[in-house]
Length: 527
Image 1 (tube, rainbow, N blue to C red):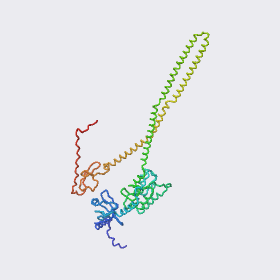
Image 2: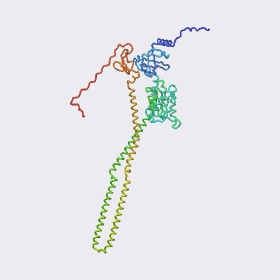
Image 3: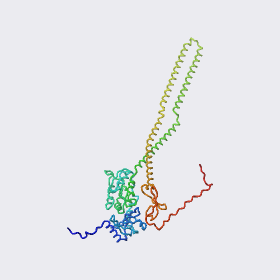
Image 4: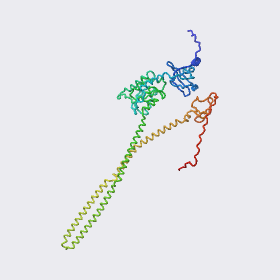
């Protein structure tokens, strides 16, 4: 059996005991320290605390400002600000990390990174790289969109989803790293690679390029302040949209790109139109074209009808000709009878002077001549009447009601075709208005302040009825009112009651109503 180690009987520490022992040691040894550094990763939490990082050229330390000390700070913590802070060093046992609890903070100047960034920005601006005259317009309806971003992040998914909803087109992703030493060179190579693509080839040349990345600290986004990358964007012959970081993040690529987007999703909206809106606009133009064509047809029809009113009606012309024909036929028959009677009287008068034997043969011959002349005249009148009747029937056959009703049938067909084209457009317009109304109703329901109460939330009102938006504004011992979905409850803020009584807001005097005008100036009711 081997000998036991000399310290084998030492009592072992638990992890918690060691962590809290280190915590007490640091707090006792460094209970008051004064640091100078540059602020980074500043986060204003909703509970009132401020989390940040103090750094210099070689090291960094996490820091926290509790909400009770935030109101006593002389400056507001901002990204890139160089400050001098005082506080104590402590540890976070759950994560084996040490940090500084800041009690005071004062400004010491602009950080080194921001100073370097401002010098580079002034240099590039002096060269004219940021001039608005050099910005290229974005294409209205791009067929191919190039995206330079990380293929594994949420940014590319948001861009593809937004483009698919608005304007389905081909998207080419050039994968790059968007953070670190290699990010600037890879993004520059991607932009130059897109610009070098031929217009005709297996891989189409993009009509627009989106350079996208999610939000982060100044160090995370520092690659997009690289001078070589800025010059590569300025030299590109394809319009570029910069979508680096969130709305408050700014890099040098934002100033030299053709358009700056606050978020990657907004960049996808800038690059693409809305297909549904284009279709609706095209339908509206199509409907306007049909309305204009209909008005032109109606104007021409009105002119034809006005010109037709000045012309005589065809039935009137035929009736007048038939009336003249009947009148002439009636007069001709009476005239022939009178002529025959006159010749007969003359014949009788001459025959009375001659003997019966001498005049027998001439009388018979004369009678035969008269009968022959009357037959020829009668047959001629009948043929003339028949010819006029055929002409009248032929004209009446040409002017049938069907021929006269043909323009009305043509107009009715045109009206039916126009109605068939307008009905789908009206249905689409109605459907679009219904969708907008449904969206407005959803927005109204989402903005209802009482809606979250049904999910277990509550509103906190102070004694004067105002809404308590921050916990730091409430004092210990102050009476508040809790508004739930079904009832109201009173509560008192935990802690000892404050000796200072908060003065209630002064009641504002109600506005006095203006005096009524004299009876002589009051205008009577017209109705």
